[in-house]
Image 1: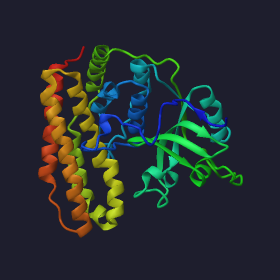
Image 2 (image 1 turned 45 degrees about the vertical axis):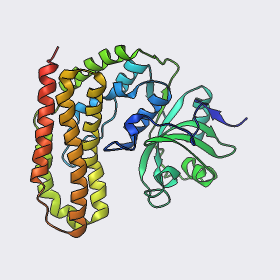
Image 3 (image 1 turned 180 degrees about the horizontal axis):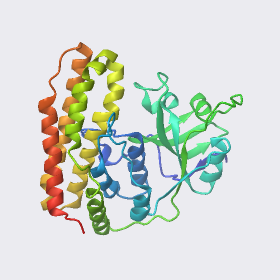
Length: 326
C-alpha cells in the first residue's frame, strides 16, 4: 500500500472545521499559519481557543501588521505538540515518506497556484506562497491530503507533481521551501478548566508584551500618508496591502475577543466586546477603502481609525486592570 496517512479518520469531503472558521466569523480566514494550526489542533481532538493569548502582542510594523503565529513553545506547553524545522536536504517528497511513515506531519510552504482549495483566487491564476500541513501522502498515485486555510483538502495528479517536483528535470537554481516536522506522539489532552488556567497565565504573559503605545494610531497616520501611493498602484496592489495590514489587525483581535469569551470570566467581557468592535470596524474599513481605491476617490478614514484605536485602548486597559503583572 503506497498511501501514508497519519490521521486516517479525516475525510476531505466530510471534514467539519472548527468554529473559529465558521462562515459567520468576521474573518473566516486569518493567515495561512494560524489557520492550519487551528485546524490541526482541532483535528487532533484538542481545543485551539486555548492557544490564542499571543495575539495581544500584535503590532503595526511599519508596512504591515504582525503576521501572527502561535509560539511553538506554547503549543508544546498546552498540547504536547512539537514543531521542529525540517532540514530539506533532499526532495520534499522523500522527507514526507520518511516522516509520515513514523507518524509525524509536515508543515511546509507551498505554491497556492497548485492548491485546488484556492479556486477563485490563486489556483491556476497566480503563484503565491502559503503554508500547508501534509497528513496523507501517496507518491505512487500522486495524491495528497492537506490542511490549508480554514479546512482539510485533497489534491492529485499534475498539482501533486508540480508541488513536489515529481518528474521535473533537476534545477540547480531551485531553492527548497521552508518546512517543519510536527511530532504528535506526546499529545496531552488536558481538561478544559486546566486549559483555561494555563491560557490565563499566557494571557498575562502576552499582555506584558503589548505595544508600548497605541499601534492603531500609528497605522492611521501611515495610511493617510500612503493612500495616494496605494490608489495609484490600483486594486490588485490594494488587496495585497490590505492582507498584510487590515486583515491581520482585524483577524488578530477577533481571535482575541473569542478567546476572552472562551475563558468565561465576566470581568473580561468589556475587553472582548472592545476587540470585537475593533475587528468589525476593520472589516468595514477594508471594504470602504477598496471602493475608494477602485474609484480613485478621496477617503477620510480618520473617524474609523479613531474608533479602532479607542477600541484597542479600551480592551487593553480592561485587561491591564483585571490581569495585573504577576
